[in-house]
Image (cartoon, rainbow, N blue to C red):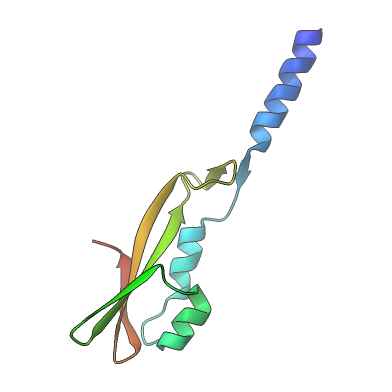
Length: 99
């Protein structure tokens, strides 16, 4: 009897570590829109992890969590992806996963 109770409690605690969450990466990606200004982008997505400038193209790189099966384990990300937003003349012209 003691084993059954202990096993039930242990399973309950372990499943509590897996919290279903909306996919943060997908939610962040939805915020970027073609034609947004640099300020609108920063308001929507926050400051990028890094940025670069090549000729007339600015590239903002965001480090976003890709949740596997919409779960995080102990609130830690299982896989990270770099997501790039390219701006020309201060406006978003493209966005997506880094090549």
